[in-house]
Image (tube, rainbow, N blue to C red; front, side):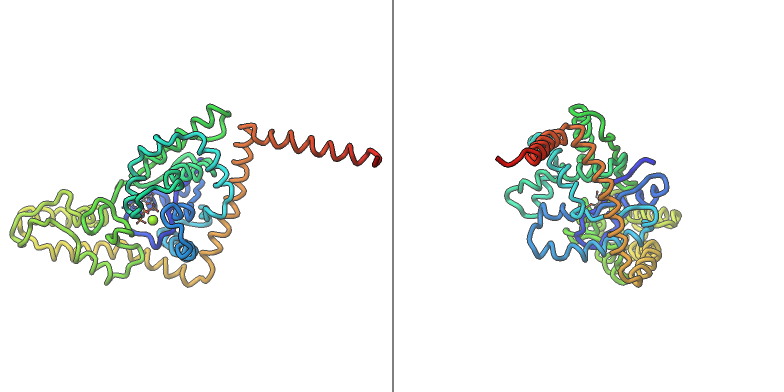
Length: 352
Ligand code: ATP
Ligand code: MG
């Protein structure tokens, strides 16, 4: 069976952007692929290495896994694991670092964005290497497919280059993984900015209650030129309509709202009220399932524990294969064998 690897940084609860960018694909492909979902806690260190940020990782991981389960990720089928507890990730990361040039990394636009968002004047070495660590994540279970949002596409391309280079230098160990971008490559934020993101404060969480969703939708950015309901409005690129298109299952209602909006025959209030209803209808079953899992004390921890143990086995096998192909195992073997031989020989010889 082919494999999937994807995941998220445990920075808190997940939002609609995570869902459309990656989670919906994960849920859909669970039966077709053997899935590994990574809680990428090491990745948070690239911008937040402070101890107080590390202390919250376990709780953030739990919250995230509740979201996974609520969306339909099934631990009986899929493996959910904690990145920092799989030591082989660090090993593979170092080996891959030798196969990538610095300018290749510096050209990635995602890195510049991350440094800017984290208010970092200068880039830590680990942040520059973030896409290499991601490549290690993908290749630890030797995954064939990586379902991610658009912002991660370039990182999968880098992973392909690393896998090809490794295989060329040392022999076939890794598959060349394909990227699978979600139906909505990048979901806009409620404020109209390009990407819904928790750190930008423009996210609707999968666990938000209906009143919170209503408030967030009420204050959503729409067409700024439309100061009155009788002014014709712009539908294209309008976040309220983008959300309608994605989440409102009543397509006739959406078309009617668009026609009236363009003609200046509907107020923002009605468009938003209907969006609130649609979003809450989408989120209700997710909220319900989340509550069910939250009631099962310790269950998420067991899911993460079992998944991590399972991934450790896979990771060990991968690193053994990689080091063997490189001849690295042989370096140690030659030395350790000689050392053992010498010891044995000395033990046989009488003390002089
Ligand atoms: P946030 O800034 O809200 O914490 P993030 O970008 O840090 O989000 P990651 O943990 O880095 O989230 O990414 C998890 C996955 O979700 C990735 O595949 C990413 O592409 C996807 N993703 C995150 N935000 C969006 C979005 N607004 N639209 C589509 N996909 C998204
Ligand atoms: Mg995140």
